[in-house]
Image 1 (spheres, rainbow, N blue to C red):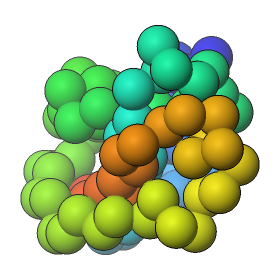
Image 2: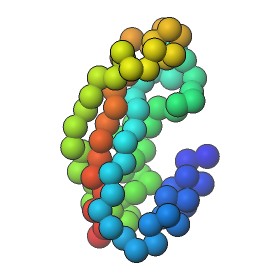
Image 3: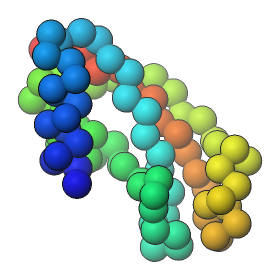
Length: 86
């Protein structure tokens, strides 16, 4: 599914502009998505050919995502990246 999403992402922004990408990180062995965990290595693997990637911030969103915490996820982090066209 991820390669399809990346193709869709590029289709949404045919003219390359700086874009924010927000991901979630958590242990998917505890609870499978959705929402699905996306790690920084995956962001780099999929977007580094077209964008310079800058990590902007990490937020603990465990209290906002009660569905996953009820399923046993202890740590749920939202990552925000700035994607700047190369």
